Image (cartoon, rainbow, N blue to C red):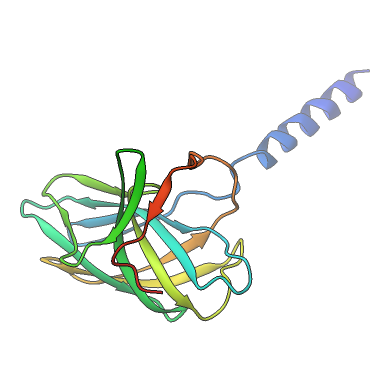
Length: 170
């Protein structure tokens, strides 16, 4: 009986180790900038656009500007902002980039600031890593990888409002 109890305890411990979150957070630091958990979502075959999300922390004493990004997996990457106004979700490119104030973190997340990976050269597949170079004004460029994570329902579903994609190029 003691052996069975010990075996069950060992099995329970082993199973709990397997139940950890499959996509562990990853972060990159260069100089005064930290990029935490860059990620994307899988895209169906033939879909021309993907997304990119991350948290950018400016640990310095001067503001910096996130000006652009590029990846060999897309013809173009642009920085966008989604905003809900009077029941209409709109998305627009940030032509002048995104300010990251000194000592603060700016989140790129669903329904907010995000990257648009335009004219994808192929679908983004769950489990793969997408190389991305992030360019700043006031800080050095950084090479990161977007981890393509499963669609797990953690983001808020969009309501049936209208999506205005003014200024978006496909």
